[in-house]
Amino acid sequence: MKTRLINIGFGNIISADRVIAIVSPESAPIKRLMQEAKGKGTLIASTCGRRTRAIVVMDSGHIVLSALQPETIANRFAEKEGPHIHRDKE
Image 1 (spheres, rainbow, N blue to C red):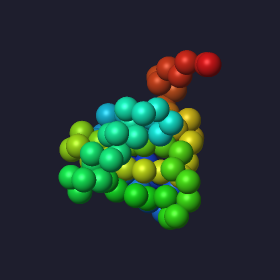
Image 2 (cartoon, rainbow, N blue to C red):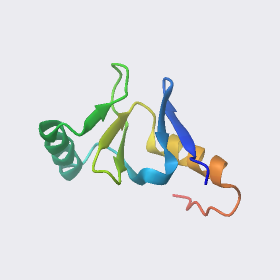
Image 3 (cartoon, rainbow, N blue to C red):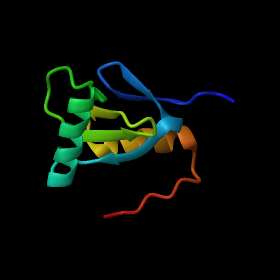
C-alpha cells in the first residue's frame, strides 16, 4: 500500500491517510483544541511564521497548523484521490 502525501505549504508534507479533519481556526472550540495540544506537546506548527489559516487534525491526536486555507488543502486531497471525491459547493 502506497502512502499518499499532501503538501500543506512551504514544503511541509503530511500523510493523507492519517488526516481526520481540516478546519478553520476561528471558533472557540478549535482554539481550545490548539491550546490543549500545545500543552500536551502534540501541536505541530508548519506555518513558517505566517498566520494560521487551517488546522489539520490527525488520527494520532496531533494538531498541525498550516498557513494555507482549508479549501486549498482539501483541493489537494481531491487531486490525489481522483474524480470520485464529491465536494459540496458553498
